[in-house]
Image (cartoon, rainbow, N blue to C red; front, side, top):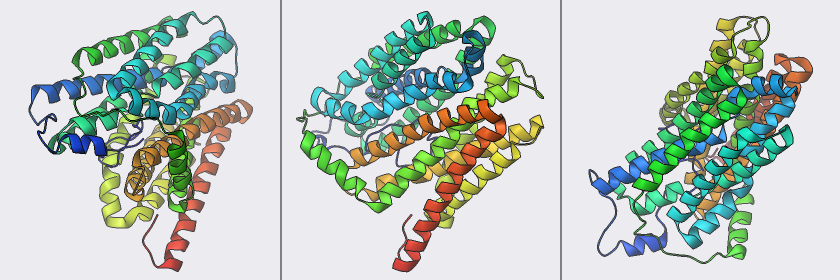
Length: 431
């Protein structure tokens, strides 16, 4: 689930609390064996988690950059092709809570290793999928397999890294997520444009396997982890408690709605750029994901905006920026479309960073589960928005996809307005 800090890109984010577990705290009260700043073990841990983040998000978004090529080659609609992207995030969302429970039982490094290795092996099989159905099933399994890393990585860092080095370690891990998310889209898209979608997926699999090898060779053994029994009833009580908290529910809705916009836009923008009136080559259209780098800046800016405008004020700015980008993207001008994508991406990241940070501050108990629930809503939003946006694009073109995204932003504005009114009535400062 998303990191509590808004100072890093939050597009592809982990699902664990950044607070050390009670067992880890107790274990370190005596001799502190956590990784210290400048130590060799800290460098290994940082590089290992960076590589794992790259592997995870190269694989998770490997098909998003080649959806138009899939449609052409398999003679399928944008909506059908979008399932290869949406089902992976759906599988990840559904597997997050079980994966976090398994990590408490069997260990962080074991679950992380099994997660990225299983997903990479499934990636090797993807280029050989004989039809769309097989490809979609494999992608769903791959998404579920990938859940072990986002559900566990930040808990590992929080337990194993000394607090004085934790911020930079978290930042480097999130950077790996962002680079993997962007790189997976770009590399698969470029390779597919040159040699076909099967080669695009093969290249993604090769990159992921290399990253997994780096991770496994470098990751230090967990020294602070203490095995905990899987307690389904206790987990269910914690989850139910979070779902009864109106503030947390609003934050989950905001994460879902912002990510629905991101899914709708980026699942369909490639189709628009290769079609008239732009007619860009597929390799150039795949390069649009470079705009994703805007998110790193806007995520950091969100923290400063929150300090000046408050949480709701920042959300209004994010919603307004995203909406302006969507309206601008309707113009039949390449410059307008590209500027619109910049605004959409900046607004999405700012809103997502603000909402995800608020989850960590709002939940006073069961923070790992609160954050996991946010991630579940977030990835469900990606699946829902991506599929609905692609179907709308197939039916009415870009205005249809943009309308899906605008409806999501209208709902997000409604959630924020409702919270503002509640805060005024109660004379409190809440999202």
